[in-house]
Image 1 (cartoon, rainbow, N blue to C red):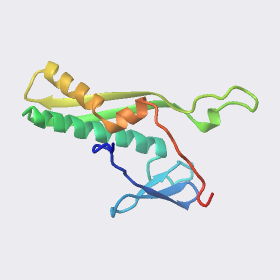
Image 2: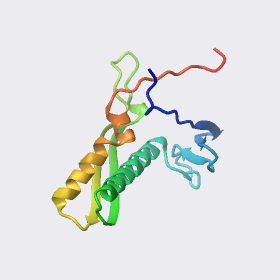
Image 3: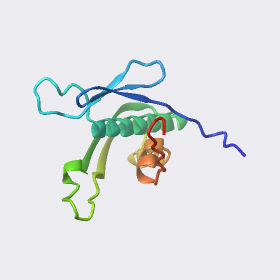
Image 4: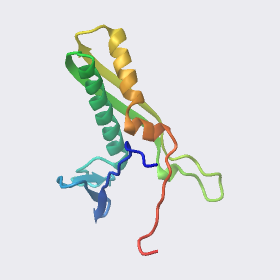
Length: 152
């Protein structure tokens, strides 16, 4: 039986130059992602990990706002500060050693939410939005990957 709540999102990522990619979603302008190179003038876009934080922050902010609206809460201000502690691929270890986890091992999120209700109600709104966030769920639940080389 098909799941009516399941849908497919698509993104086409194209290597633009050395450590820069362009990401095409629907008919929107391309979104650049770039690994910082240390070369002045070349750091023109967020890194992949920063883009992940941006996606999480955006998803949480949208969810918080939607939950507040559903409860007739008037939001005066909503800002999220996200920071993540991560290990780079360069920290993956030495040859022959046990592999080390790379990527984020902790993401801290501070939500500044000003509205016409108590802190207790705002806390419930934030908690609900976090549990209902597709991006947050993707990060903290196992996700299956199916990576294949084209033409194979």
